[in-house]
Length: 93
Image (cartoon, rainbow, N blue to C red; front, side):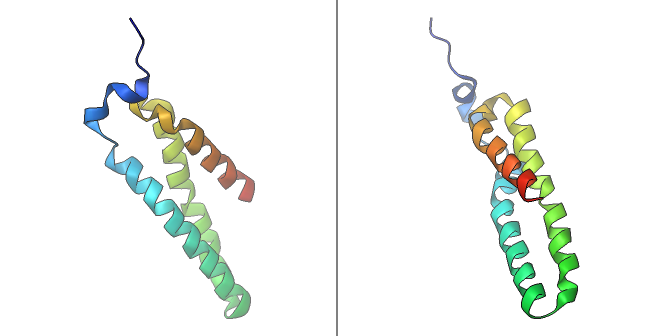
């Protein structure tokens, strides 16, 4: 009997909403951080605080993606991508 990978066992249960939300909010946050850095650079230098706050807030979606891939068996297929996302987040900090 073949062993079915964890990712395909619970297909009927779908992807948790919190995992999908974290994956969707991350690019929006990165765009916001990029725009706030541009505004701080060329318009109002007081926006560097907003840029830093967004950068800190982006740790929550990055960590939740990795945690989901590590601890929820049906999300293990996202492990490589979640790990890469978290590593890139750490490198930019």
